[in-house]
Image 1 (tube, rainbow, N blue to C red):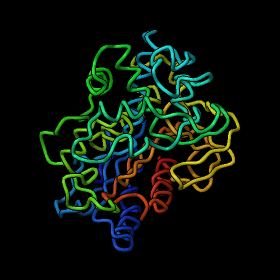
Image 2: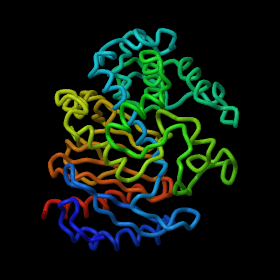
Image 3: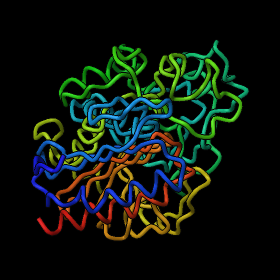
Image 4: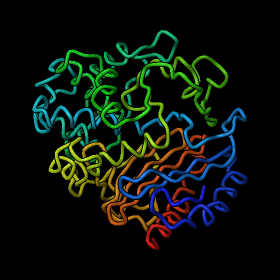
Length: 362
């Protein structure tokens, strides 16, 4: 797979292969798919190994991409903003007045940038993780969740923001959230994406720390039950190319999908100099975040290497994946290792350094 489809230095796969082989050997990662593209060109791929059940990975494998789903949710919101049906600075209460979080200062903008003061997730007692769980039950749990900090005082990464935004989308459109995302995001971006529906072909299985649910009908990422939930913060199934299309939509590709002024705003820091924390993994003195997309800034530690420009942006996913775009080099990349990220996220920076080195030479 060394053809220069994406207009990159054709040596990137050769330089990256030993790094990926070592990740597989040392981290217990069954296999890795890396996709890289320049601008709007088709991606190039490096595909090594298998999924968690031994099925060979392919460049068009379907993956559960966990929190990369938040990019799709944000794009659905931004499309409605572009149409004038949602306003970034409107209070949440304008659209969802019955939400416990509908307080002064909680707006569409603060929900997109994780500055609304919300906790990390819904209270498990309000939405017990059993086979009876569904999106309406989760939506009610989102509506009942109160902020834990005053808005715009810190960046705290939360699943509640996308959950409340999904409810706002449903209230404004009168259409089920997953259907809106399919019609307003997946179809116009030509993404093979599945949210709340069972894909027509097999999905790469992920291994990792699933606590009490390994091998059960409740196992995250790998089961029809999990996929049925249509989680606005983590339920998407898509390909490497699909993930790249999501992040590139924030870069204005294709033109016309969003107004240029809105994509520029979406990739500009919305948090100011706020400190922040993310999922118990990171604490940062400054935590730049856009309208749905995370911004690189000067964060340390981070998923990406310091070789990525401060203006670069994207999102990580618990299922072991990262999608990122760097406007400085016009290169975007996707990594999935079919193992939950806690075992090997620190290797991602080495991988993207090799990619960006190739991009700077081409």
